[in-house]
Length: 247
Image (cartoon, rainbow, N blue to C red; front, side, top):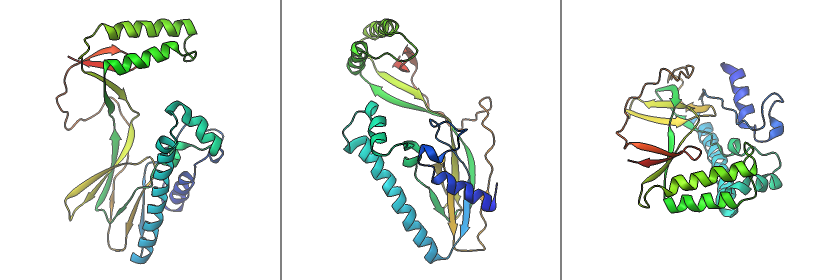
């Protein structure tokens, strides 16, 4: 998609901040991704004006996220209710996403990022968490209360079976996401962006041509890893928590 159709679709997606902004056939629990790039030729004056507006928008997005996640002082599991009491129907992920922009790149190519989020944790922290889960009156929807408690008891036993000084990691897979690789020929530099929203490219030189690549379909059976660091071997301890022990 190119031209005005692409621009209009991008503008619609930038403004899709509330549930009622989404078409009826799209789940309210889904944050829509619209990978791509929009290229504009502008005067320096117009570019500086738009740049200032984008910086203001992104600053407000950061401030809102900070209010919800830090300044409010509320727990993570209470955020949904807190947000919807203040701004009913707000899609927080869409709201937090910044609008990325670049200036006079030589080329923009696209690909996919596939990674895990890894956090180190202690045995003590996890035992405290599991005991709280056991004492809680709430069970997750897939289990009855008794099934849930039986599961937690088994997880506590598994955790107690390892040494207190064990190195533990929660290695949680994240959803595959599209990325943009922006190349600057003069600087011989590449900058990579996650871009669930269209990337904006600006240039004041009408003779400046940008090479645009295409985003191919994600193929899980054809993943090319250019550099994979040697990681220590891991042993799965608790599958539900994605908890592993270094061995």
